[in-house]
Structure formats: structure tokens, C-alpha cells
Length: 170
Image 1 (cartoon, rainbow, N blue to C red):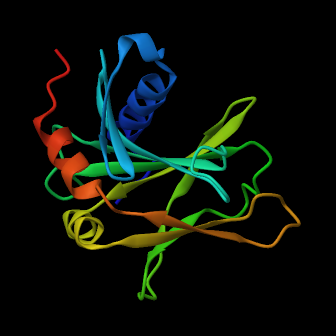
Image 2: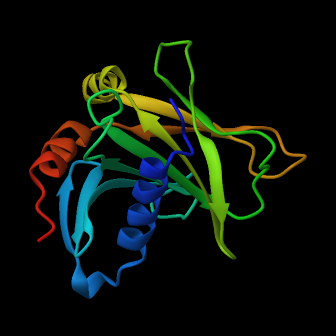
């Protein structure tokens, strides 16, 4: 799977647009810990991650369903947005609770405030996310810092992904 493919680049751009859209132009639906944001460009499922409170700004994970060529093999793209300063030489990854196989993401871009990593999500991985209760996201917040491992709830992700599947941006 090519992470830096034109289809994934378009998906990452769409996620950036949706996450940057003013709240007045969005419709937001909440499903336990996950929410679906629908804007003019489409829909995205997101969760905010914090150390003490979910809204502390540590990270945001987003999932966007892909459409068109290759969607059966890689039906979605996951992004991770973290504050700028992260160690870009080491890509982030996540692991399911109780599993030992990590799912890697690749750094794509940074702005003045944040850096974003993304990766394709296979159909099998989508099933694992829907059946799971928690994943652990790991990244190195600063070049010389120890890796930060943060739990991420999957409560509500199944319903959020169902809503994404039915989303009509028009």
C-alpha cells in the first residue's frame, strides 16, 4: 500500500478542510467518545485525545472513508494530528489493546501549530477498530523525549463509521 498516493493525499486534504471549517458551517453528531463532522466537503469521524481531559489538545484522530479506485482494499484513511515539535524522524503508530502488531502511520505535513500523519486503513483493520474497545497511539512528542503512549477509546467508532458510510456531502 502506498501511503503517499494521490488518493491518500486527497483524503488528507479533505480531512484538513473539514477540521478547519468553522463550526457554523458544520453538522456534528456524537457517538459515545467519537463524533462525525459533516461539512460542505464531506464527513469525517474524529476523536480528541488528551492526557487529563479529551479536549486538552494533545492529539486528534480522524477517519475518512475513501471513494473510487482502491477503496475495497483500503476503504479508509486515518490521520493523527499532534502539536508541532514532534520527532518527525520516527513515525507514529497504534496498537490494539492486547495485541502486539503495530499499525504505522507516516508523517505528511506540518503547519505552524500541528503536524499530521496518515495511513490507509484496510478492510480487516476497519473490522478490528469496530470490534475493539481501545487502541494505544504512540509518538515521540519531542526529538529527545521518550515515546508518549496514549489510550484512545473506540467506544462509538462503529456507529460513527456507519454514519460516514451514509454521508452525502451534497
